[in-house]
Length: 369
Ligand code: SF4
Image (cartoon, rainbow, N blue to C red):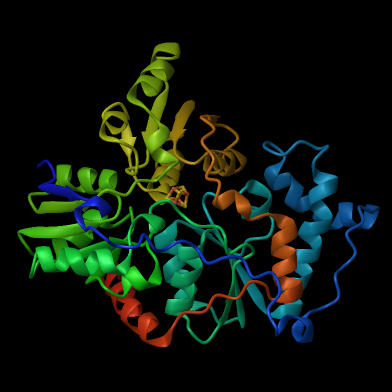
């Protein structure tokens, strides 16, 4: 059914628009004491030999001329992970040299959240955006969690504040609130349960309520509403990457090649999803390509994911509309190396906020399990 209503900041006057990823603090007071020496970053025959097996994984999407600039970082990062007892978590939207060559755990938000809760190593390096690093800290509070650039935000997370959620609750008393994981810890602390694009429908229906507030992605809310009889109150947030796709663009791909398969993320607007052959989260899209092995596939999501899938499945021709997430792209090999050398930039969350937010995230994970 269509969504019942859609709310936004203009519905609640005099609210300071609040959340964004915190300003970058390049040097914390603890850094000098815990810093390690910066490793050599020379391209040598030995580095070439040591990283040759990793280049094999990405040679379809990284040109040979680029590798001598990346390989010294790749080797240094992989060695420092051992020294620091660190693991690198990388989202599907990270670039191939990160995703395939230095990450230990890869996946969508749900997979990363589940894996973050199980990490035994001392340090988690989150290659993704700030709300993902917060989620890791929420689920594994005794570990040191660092993000290579804390300015890596998200247009969805910055669209809503904890105060907005409280006002929605006042307006709709007793209606349960579901928050997409693409929200700050302070928002997660105010809601009943979290969801990801992998499990949004399952989470909404698990509440057994006739009406649910679903925030902050209006397009994911519309997609969920189209799949359920639960009435959905939505928020006006949108992903700045997925909302740029249009139905016309998809039609032009199909006109150019009627045999092409088009798969799209549910953060896209409805006219885009109406043109797609399959709609699913990033994990579901990857599995779709693995299982179908179609000859040509257009992947309607952030561009780096298509590169990562192309590297894994060279037999499938991936058509890559290049919509990049500027926040995900803040994470680079040099910044990951800095993170490990200086333990920069550490993510901290107020303990009372973290405890409430943990309840919302764990309720989702337990549902999954
Ligand atoms: S791709 Fe969209 S939803 Fe994902 S981090 Fe970037 S802005 Fe946020």
